[in-house]
Amino acid sequence: MDFTLDTGNTAWMLISSVIVLMMTVPALAFFYGGMVRGKSVLNMLMMNFIAVGTVGLVWILYGYSMTFGGSTTGVGQFVDNPFEYFGLVGLTDDKSLMAASGVPALVAVAFQATFAVITVALISGAIADRIKFGSWIAFTVVWVTAVYFPLAHMVWGGGFLGVGGKVSEWLSTPIDFAGGTVVHINAGAAGLALALLLGRRKGWPTSPIRPHNLPYVMLGAALLWVGWFGFNAGSEFAADGTAGRAWINTFVATCAAMLTWLVTEKIRDGHATSLGAASGVVAGLVAITPAAAAVDSFGAIAIGAIAGTVCALAVGLKFKFGFDDALDVVGVHLVGGITGTVLIGLLATNKQGGWYPDGAQNGLLYGGGATQLITQILVAAIAVVFSFVLTYVIGSIIKAVTGLRVSEEDEVSGVDLALHGETAYETLDGSRVLTEVN
Image (cartoon, rainbow, N blue to C red; front, top):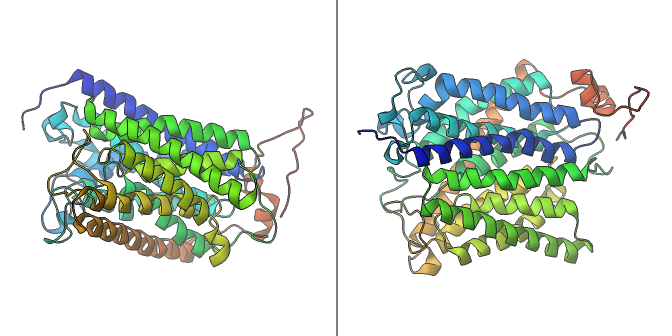
């Protein structure tokens, strides 16, 4: 198509790209870093930083091409040609996925790079305190190539799980506005697979493993909330009313989720905690992501309120089933992502001044019947299975080749010192602060 530059849309997308990158560093790094023990905080920060480096590099080389190369038939239903735009050579503005909005191709590359980066970084929270740093580096490259790029193509790049493709002729077009399946279900299922492969941290769950810096956690959550407006509203690819709808829904759903998480926590535990407030914020952000521009304000409030309650309860499942999801990636991102994706089938409406793809239907509660609900459930299930199985295979191969887990001695002494030769905190005389050992 002919390309005409829209400077307003381009400026908005550049800003969105910056604040979505901020969601990984520093936002997620602080959020996760505050939740681990003092002897592991540098390692957690490094896991987030390294995800930016590795994923950012492969995205430019072949990731964008694999995801948005343009093929939608045959194998193109599942993944695209990594050499179509290798190193972005041959990519022109008229071939940009944002061409209709007047946004240059390189801006589209930048915006989508930030999504790939944070999806990989999210996984790190499930495996805190115990993975080898070299194994994590290898995992980030292999996983984003074999899991993220194909799933993103299937949903956003013209594959069978998104607009332009259909899971089945008797189902509707799936709705995933900004990444409920591609980012959150994907990262949550991957985190579960790796947590099972790595096993429990020493002392878990009999010994308490508490966050070492709750102000870091709340700072990280606040920055995530700000960045998420670029994440969701930016996914419209334009500065228009649909972006405004996504912004409002992101805001109000998160408010509702934080409040319902705290109410649930108060009833269950007798306290409304800062960790609960921060976790409720993230749960609301996760759940509204796929629905951000496809529901009205009441639908957004309902999604947030349900997600805050469900995720607050879901984080306890790891104790019941015995998997050590260190920082509740499964309870918040997998469960929250599924919650938001499925609730679209109940609450989606094409009368809310937002985005509604061709072939999608209203939700069950808005007169559209059960077809959209069945579609959303099926797409969520496919994403869970796809990500979990491939992640387990990738993790098993890396485990066999290089090993996944640090030694017990290194885990007890602290992965900061063992893997990086540093500690986060020192006394005024320069001696290292000893942290708790579980």
